[in-house]
Image 1 (tube, rainbow, N blue to C red):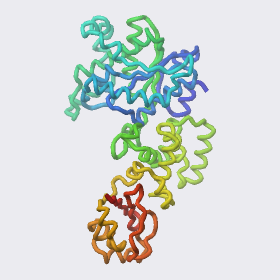
Image 2 (cartoon, rainbow, N blue to C red):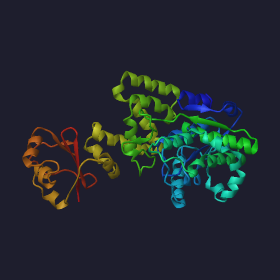
Image 3 (cartoon, one colour):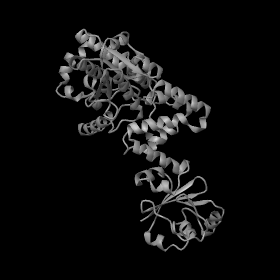
Length: 434
């Protein structure tokens, strides 16, 4: 399959300009996508866009990733209802470095003729004065043309209708012209003939093709993928806790894995085509197996495995699977022993965290004393309550069933400092011995 066919069957293709397919068929085409450095990490919403570049390179074309060091200082109105907070140059540079490292995991920068490249539009905008830009670039597009863009109209109409939106400033209004010049610059200096992005970027991208036509008499092309959305129509990439980031310091590999594992069947069937490079035959096979036994969550597991390994590593994937076993599977003491401290804390983030002194722990006579008095009544309010539940087989420590209420406290400390207490089927507590 060529690139268009590949994107179409994967459900990734939204629209493209006439002539784009012919341009791609004519030989190796250089195409680019811009990434906004307003955070130090990309998230899984951005990853769908990265996959457009991945598919471009797999089809034999040359991908260019543009990090918007200059345009990141301005802000893009597309898909937004209010003005963006602007960042200083130092913060933007730090963010750019983080994004660069993430893109290198997906694109091959040593592939020969079609090796990926990374550029920063700050490099050509930093010496461009405001007056020069107005004289050399701004005169080529009319305000009428720029006003017709859907992203601009939405912001203006919302403001006129008294919505919460704040309208649109000249700063953000000018964004499409800046992005259009990026396309022109890359067209002239990097042989770029195609810009890609999510569907909400169509207006900005076609502004670039129009600018190239008016400034140089040249021909350039646009292709946009479908905007990946959740079932409620909002942008994909967020969980209840906010964005699902590619940076493990911002979203742990365990939480990252769990996000994919918890997708609905409908979402998994759609997104396994977008976020993985699995061939059609394998995806069809997985889909059929999933339909026969949905409770096994075959699609979710295949998707979670593939993406977690590519974003993090195989080691982190296995650690996430082991961690999942602790709460949702057959994880035992041996499983708990194998969890790194950061993974253990990630698994039990949000459960009651109880600190006890090492002296108190070592001097505790029975497990009932530990679960009631020593832990300050946070697990059981009284020894009597603890004893009753232990006798009924409802208490485990480190995944081991507590046999008797008067058992001695002889439990191994995980990572030399933690106990995992389970009361009933769903109530967990993490006890830290310090």
